Amino acid sequence: MRAARFAEFGDHNVLTVVHDAPEPEAAPGRVVIQVSHAGVNFAEVMFRRGQFPVGLPHVPGLEAVGTVRSVGGGVTGLRPGQRVAALTLEGGGNAEFASARADLTVPLEDELAGLPSALAAAALCNGATAWGVVHAAGRVEQGDTVLVLAAAGGVGTAAAQLARAAGAARVIGATSSPEKAAQALEFGYDAVVTYDRLEEEVRRLTDGAGVDVVLDSVGGDTRGTANGLLATLGRHVVFGDAAAQDTSYQANHVWFTGTALVGYNLGGLANSRPAVLGDHLRSALRAVADGSLRIEVTELPLDDVAKAHELLESRASVGKYVVAVDGR
Image (cartoon, rainbow, N blue to C red; front, side, top):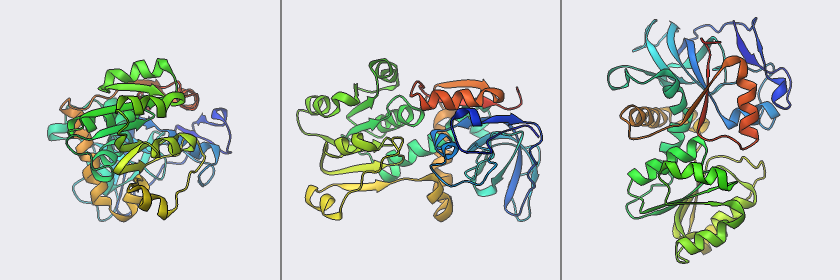
């Protein structure tokens, strides 16, 4: 089958499209999906660089939309020919056929029937993550001030809208450039600042009070600056480390500052509380389907998946990249 694959770790050029990748089989508790569209995520860039352990050769792709080709033993509620959206958190979504856990596969039926495949693919990882960091980890409440790092990215733009819908009084974004800040403003932020002026501008915008919630996938020095902007009883939600530069905190730090540090990770939820992750996934898909959550999608053919990786690494992206697998 056709698949995007890398056989060594490195830059985006190690990712190529092959025509002889082995097709997956429907193992117990799993389904095989004939993929029409698959999302591209920054986590896959980190896998390709070798920042997280994956076996080689590796087919990236943490999410896929298509039709069920076959079902494994013990699977109920899913059938061949059914249109579905699925998390493929072990990878494999950037291929003609992908294997997915049945409990992380959602039929695109009823209120989801009219959801376009490219948009459904864009809503899976980013939408579930945005829903989870806003509602489960960040517990955004009426009147909160929320700071979203990586404000122009796929999760950031979704989280801003969901935070507003949850009752946030003010949503502030932060990003790397004035150009991306201007683009992010289209997604409901009250203000978007650049990282080089993060502390100064957030203090000014909040009259020195700071923020109630930080949504942080960036890490590095920016993580430390954002943490220092938390108000008492504020929540700092960590769900990524794009800077690849960990910032650790002692327990006494959260004690003395009266703040909370909370993590959100799709893989961890999939392993320990898959029903909760499934709820987040379905909630995000419903929000996109009913128009309450807008996602900016850039669609590329599978042959250009390396280009999508390059754009994600350059921080030039806004919204979400999706590859059309059946469109070649």
